[in-house]
Length: 260
Image (cartoon, one colour):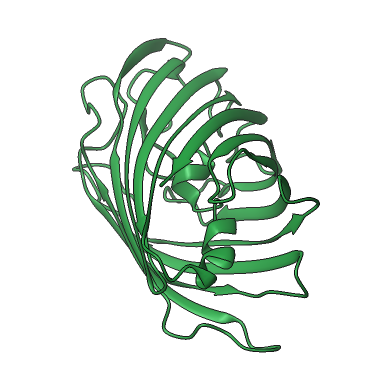
């Protein structure tokens, strides 16, 4: 199930590719509200509002990000729980509930071990921690931490095209009776600088299924960034189309960031 915003998925990865040229440390504050709709592999029609606020620090080698989301969900089957990448304890019940509150907080760190040169991409190992801060009682989370390690490859073709790919392995926190398993996560795509202010990104993103017997999420995502300042402050609009039963039917998001 893919209901996370681009802020969490790192697809503002555009700044990971372009950021290799930043020798001066920069901070980014952003907010990316998004809405997702679909069955997510259940028998219910689920609506999720996911509002992610984040603080990011980056310099030539490091990118550190703290993300705090607000969640509001309706149509969630009773007994089911949202997780960092799926729905736990799916059942065939037609009884549903609505809930809202703090989501799971994410902390991530990316370190560029090789800046890239010519046809060789930048190599960026990363680690992420999902803290189980979302309410278990309301079904907004499992109450367990997840830990992910992985690596990103970020390339520059000419001055306008920025392809990227990421592969990670997530150690999923398993609540009592949850029967969850660890998963691989991945994405591949490219950003294109149309003008100094307009940047477009297309990507495919997916992962394994945390719950055995269900499809993992697979999504195509299109995003548009509009820069108001040269540092990257501006707005972002994106659309998400699910390609599997484990994804939302669709998702949309509109956010903004300030870089200083």
